Image (cartoon, rainbow, N blue to C red; front, side, top):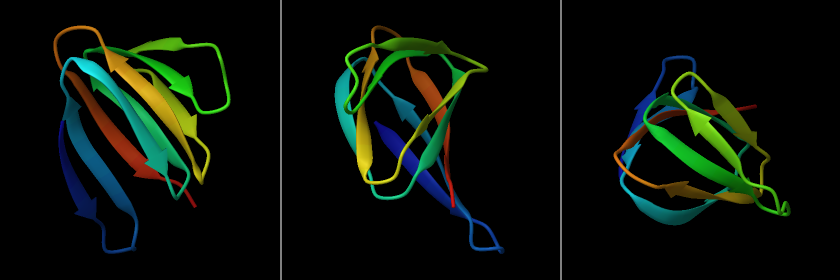
Length: 85
């Protein structure tokens, strides 16, 4: 995984990144919106049993103080993570 943070003058922050094939778990302190800009992944939010597939142009939100499992079956999944108020 490769991740780069961008801080904007108004104090907001976004993270741009690449997720390589594999299964990973990420925790959140702050609520976030994950936009998939290239590739595909399968996501399971903490506390849920169902998984959902996402491809370029789709997004999902993760509550604060939570987390999610993400699987990239092949290729590279590119994302933009926006931290929500």
